[in-house]
Image (cartoon, rainbow, N blue to C red; front, side, top):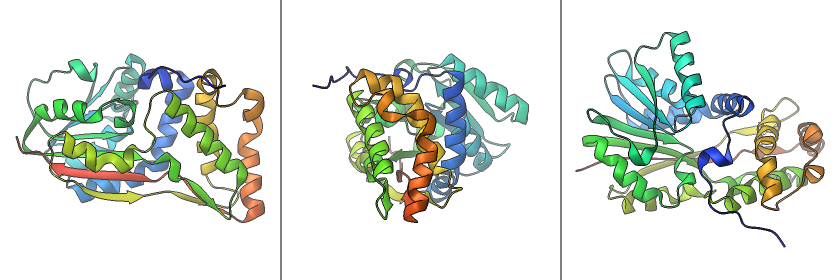
Length: 278
């Protein structure tokens, strides 16, 4: 019989070790174009003051900074001091004067002045009631401020022709997140979350990264996330290290996909945006 864990925080599910911070940066590169397209469609523009919640090592904040330009400002917020330290150092190295990072719990966050846009990627999925969180965060927005979130549907990842190991690996990741209290289908629930938070019906867009052939980065993405989750995966009874065989997982995923000449669909992201009316 498997054991269901008590709901965990984002930091407990994806602990901010050096290896995990590196994985988050590589993940951001993999999905970055999808988020950039979302920001463009949503209307992130020069001069805006933007709040990025759950900023991690800063990749979404840096992306937003490209849209708001030197006359705008991006404030990244995360509970992890380690992640904020890395993000701050990266901003200093890149000479980005329009980006700053603060360590804070979202439930206790206070800002000195309102923002023009509220953004986040892969953050609402970790909250038991994301609409309550979003309603509170909207208090930081100016009238007609923009709300833009990017969340995934982990269950929609697939391969064609079918690849058993890929399907098993995605299923293990999905079950682990679910048993830890995260919602792996938050992307499909964004419209409901927005309306429950008092926002207008959002506009939405779904997109995904696809992989084919021996050089696809999908294999390493799946393997790295599995590696991060493996201790939790064992703890909640999804799979053991012996089951997963993490040392050879990427190579086996690659061999299977190449042998089947398969196209792999990484978990699709749903982007939602709406304007807040106070």
